[in-house]
Image: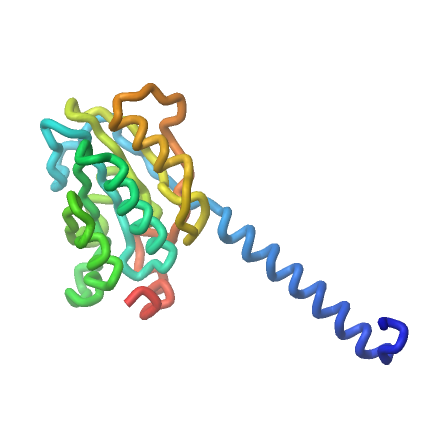
Length: 206
């Protein structure tokens, strides 16, 4: 079959295959590149707006409302809360620039998070709370026990923008169930949290 093709068509097909392979390689690298994490406090930081629960472990997620990658993190948070069987309370803080309108932050990601039982959502003006907790990437999750001690820090997706079984989620489920775990940190996959994310392809998450 290949011998019957004119030479220019054969070259075109080979070039197309090479460019497609390169594209897949770039995409795979993008999906597997973890975001930065700041200095996470081992104890509950002074000045935190989030409320530490006195009876259950407290989970805090920091998210960018315009980040399409965060959709998977919200989906996994929904699964995580269901798996925790009421042993966990969660709060999601969405970054909002001080000069933005309310609808900039209240995207479908906000609404999806707010619809999860046991989860409360809040605005984080200029990322002040995220900075206090050392979060720099959208989807960063922190878990503290009732004594205000850090149990877990990381992400709850296996790669950027992909929902499904992952180590972070499994680790948190084990922790809130009282099981011993050896892993207490996982990579966070998402957009930059403390910026407009160049408006993170504004409109994609709305």
